[in-house]
Length: 261
Ligand code: APR
Image (tube, rainbow, N blue to C red; front, top):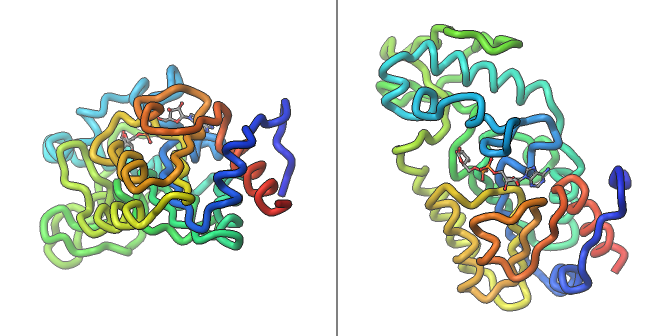
C-alpha cells in the first residue's frame, strides 16, 4: 500500500485502539470518499457539483419530467467521468480492512469505486449511477448508453425496450424515497454494532437526511464513531473521535497500523 503524499498523517492512539479492538466495522461513506479519485463532491466550495449546477434543475423528478434530455445529458456525462477514474488508496484500504475485520460498507455514493477496489457494498442508500431503469414501467435497462466526454446541454435518454418509456439513472433524486431494502440493511448493520465496534464516517457533510442520521444509530448501539473528514461537519457532534485529514491519506494509515498491531 502506497505511503500518503505530503505531511505524515496524524491519527490518535484512541482511534487506533478503537480499531484494533473492534471485531466489526461499518464504514459510512460520502462524496469525500471519492474526491481524491477525481469525482467532485457536491458541496465543497468552488469544486462541489451544487456550486456549479442547480440541483433543482437536475436532481428532482420534476426536473426530469420538465426536460429529460437536459437531465439525462448530465448523468451520462457523470457516467463517463466515473468510468474514467480509479478507486483511490482510501477505497483500497477499506477493501483490505475486510481481511482484518468484519467490514460493512454503506455508501451515499452512486459511483462503483468501492466495488472496483474489491469491497462488497452492503447498501447504496442513494442508488447507483450505473443502474438504469425505465421511468414509466421500472424495467431495468442494461443496453448501451451514449457517454459524452464533456458536459453537453442535451442528450436523448435511451428508450425502454418494454414500453418505449424513457430510461433514467438509478439514483435517488431529492424528494424521492430511498431504496427501502438498502436503507433497512444499513440500519440493521449499525444496530448490530456494540461497544468495542467501530463506525467510520468518511467524507460526508451530514446534511442530507435520512442518511445523515445513520451515525446516530451507531452511537445508540454503543459503537465508537470516528469521523474522517478534513472539515467539521453537521455530524461531527455524533462522532466520538475525529481525524481531520483526507480519506486517501487516513484510511491506508489506519489499516497499516491495525495490521502491524
Ligand atoms: N476525504 C475526506 N472527506 C472529504 C474529502 C476527502 N478527500 N474531500 C472533501 N471531503 C468532505 C468535505 O469536507 C465534506 O464534508 O466530504 C464532504 C462532502 O460533502 P457533500 O459534498 O455534501 O457530499 P455528501 O455528504 O456525500 O452528500 C450527501 O447529497 O447531493 C446529495 O445525493 C447526494 O449523496 C449525496 C448527498
